[in-house]
Structures are given as C-alpha cells and as structure tokens.
Length: 117
Length: 114
Image 1 (cartoon, rainbow over the protein chains, first blue to last red):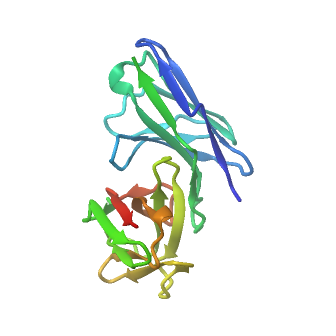
Image 2: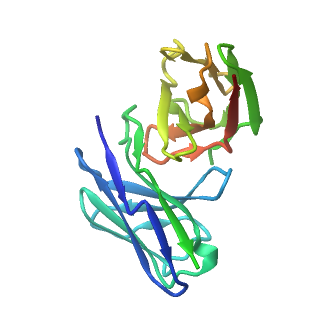
C-alpha cells in the first residue's frame, strides 16, 4: 500500500540551530502534503499545506519565516525549522494522499520528535 | 468551517469487552468522508476505518465498526472484543470531497484493562 516516509525520527540539537525534516511519498505522487505539529496528549494541529511547485499555504498563527516549507518534487516535501528554540520542541508529522473526490485516506509519516536544548 | 468534536477525553474497557467512542461533526456539505485514526504510544497514525457520507451502510473492518448517523452528524466507533493492542489515542477526522485537508477531533485516549 501507499507509504509515507519521514526522516529523521528524532532530533536533539542546540538552540539556534536550523533543522530540516523530510517527508517522502514512496510509491505515489503527491501534489499536496501536509505538516502537523502535535503536543503531548493533544490532537494534530495543521501547520501548513505544502503544494508542489508553488508556495505553501500556512495556517493562521504559523510563522512562515520560522517554518520554511519546500515541495520541489512530487514525492518530497521538506520542513525547515529555522533558528530553533526550546519552545519549538514538539512532535512534527507529515501526511500525503487523499486526493480530491477520492475516498483514499491520507497516509502519515512516522513523525519527528524535535528537542531543542 | 468544519469542526469535529470528541467529547470523551478518556475511555477504558476490559479486555474482550466492547467499547464505543463518540464523535460529532459540523458541516454544511452533503458529501464528505469520515475517518477514525489510531495513534499508539509509538505515535504512528494508523487508519482504522473510513466512511463515505453518501453511503448509508455503516463501514466495518473486522472488530471495528461505525455507527454513522448523517442527520445527527454523528460518527461513533465501536470496538468489539477489545484487545490490549487496541490501547491508543483515537482520532475522528473529517474531509471534504473537494479537498484533501483533514479536520481532526481532540482525541480519545483508550485504555484496555487486562
């Protein structure tokens, strides 16, 4: 079946570092991918919609310059947390699939646990 | 805007028993998709079951079934013969037919007691 790969699964780094997270659709093309942030025991919060070949659409309250999204190909979207600080520590998940007028579900990556020291 | 509500933050069930998780949603659309996802401690998001709004028949997947009440905008999940491996956070989700964006509920943490 369809698989979404997310890498890395865990990042621990110093404050001020920029961190890049990759999301790949392994056996299908994804013109749209989604990036979520999840705090412990809470729901997934949509941060942005990544659009292949165009700018990402950010949700209200999400800083575009802080969370850079690039979707340069039909199988890869990247999220870069720039100059990360401890408050950026969280669990980040990407998803792809579930095209318009299709009952096919979105498929999720395994997530990235980001810890900023 | 669509909203999804899960009114039960936590639920527990005895192994081998049946439990029902509730979900309500709000939409002005007549056609849409509904999903239940499971998130175990590994935090991987796993699709449990899906339902198309135009289908009157309730979806079933082995021990998992839904009670879809379109007029009431209700989409509950029933887990039969609960197993220890069913312990997880369960999320109800909504999606328009016109897009691929999901709207999630707050989640229900299910504990299965041996």
